Every structure is written in C-alpha cells, then in structure tokens.
Length: 245
Image 1 (spheres, helix red, strand yellow):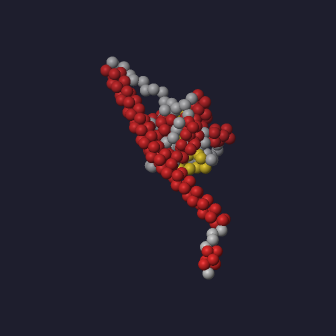
Image 2 (cartoon, rainbow, N blue to C red; image 1 turned 90 degrees about the vertical axis):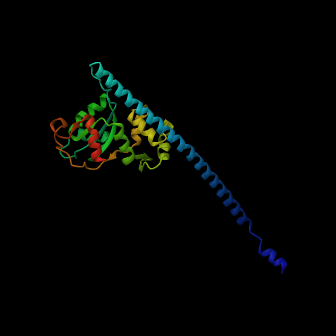
Image 3 (cartoon, rainbow, N blue to C red; image 1 turned 30 degrees about the horizontal axis):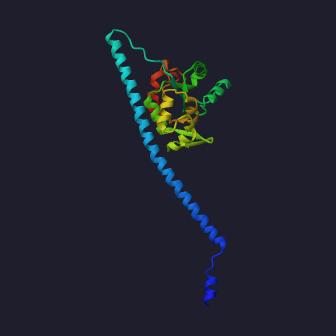
C-alpha cells in the first residue's frame, strides 16, 4: 500500500517544468511592473518641474512685454508687438462650387471637414496657400491660453496612423520622446514657441474637430473686415476658438 501511495503522488516532469516556467514569468512580470511604477514616479517629478519651468518662462515673457509697453508710453512712442510665428486655421465652409486646386490645398492643410482646425508656422509658403483658400477658412494668431485649451480639451495624437486621445503623457513620449518632447507641457511649449521640432509635434497632433460656434457665424461668404467670418482675423481668432472649443 505504501509503495502504491508513493507512486500516486509522483508529479510528471512536464508539469514541474510548467510550474517553474509560470513562476519565472510571474517574477519577471512583477519586476517589470515595479520598474514601470518607479519610472512613472520619476517621470511625474520631471513633468512637474517642466510645467513650473515653462510657467515661469511664459510669465517672464509677459512681464517683459508689459515693461516695454510702459517704457514706450513714457517716452511718447509706440511698442510694436513682435511678429506672430504661429497660425491657427479653421475651415468654415463646405465643398460646394469649390475649385479643384482649392480642394487640394485644403487637403494639404489637413482641413478635410468643416470646423476642422490646425496649427501652422507663419512663412511665405503658408501665407500663399492661405491666400488661395481664404474664402473657405478663418485664421489668426492664437495665444497661449487658446493653444493650451485646444490641446488639453480636444487633443488627439497620431500613433501608428490611429487617432488616440492624449490621456497619458506616455503616448506623447512614445512618439516624440526622441525629439525631447515627453509630456503635454513639452508639446504645448513646442507649438507656442514654434520650436525646432514644431513640424514633428504638429504632425503628431490630429486635426482638431471643433464644435459649431456658440451664437453661430456672422456671414461665411464675406471677409472678416467686411463684417463676415472668412480670412485673417489676427488676435480675434482667440474669441472664435473660445466659442468653438
């Protein structure tokens, strides 16, 4: 009887190997989770430091602009604002009676649907393209508040050609980490300052899908200077973004 009982509890070698393999996998997984948690804790501190650094930078710029305005006023002169480097373009009209070349330019600008919005760098090529599609778009110079609100509220990234909401900094780090952009604050800073990796950061951002503006549009077919909505509205674009965001 004793010999039979001993034979009965012998565990097959394959089962032992399987148990050992599962234990090794569990240990490796636990180590990976712990390493990820540690990295996440370190990253959180880094993100906070970066946010503080950028906030100070924006504040210093604002203070500098205010002091220069005051100085100019005291000396009886005028303070000329620095030229804008960033544009935000919103498509406000559909495709009815549109010239094929105009449609192509709107596709190049990634404005495929009505109320789509994108950031662009101010340069001669961009302004020439905008001149051609002016009746179909409204554009201007967004401020820091507008850029932040757009990215935080309606920001989606392009990850493996998929439209992914920016719910975690790791999504940005995964795609733009090689350019030194590892969190949302980095992304906002790169866009606002039109930094050296603006092209990569802007291509990563999916075109913004905005709502129809609160209170509606005045007159789509007329230029902004004629009391309409199309064309360059300079700093007044921020008011339109507030109504559409």
